[in-house]
Length: 76
View 1 (cartoon, rainbow, N blue to C red):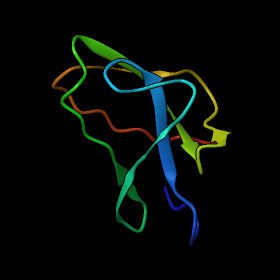
View 2 (view 1 turned 45 degrees about the vertical axis):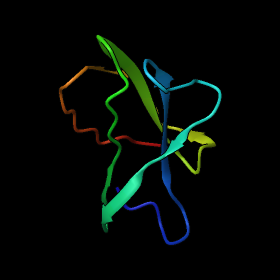
View 3 (view 1 turned 180 degrees about the vertical axis):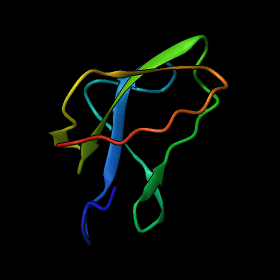
């Protein structure tokens, strides 16, 4: 997702080091792809993506099992 120059995506959630109160800034790896990686989740996590850690993505939270990758295409 291209969020525009000077903006960033963050991730909030439950599981591992995630929190619903404050997001973790994701890493931009090209014009429209962002990533976040952790080895702190045990079992599973529930996540939501935000723009600039203030604007929540629409829709349901995403769920991911530890050790698995997911790909999201959030809409705002």
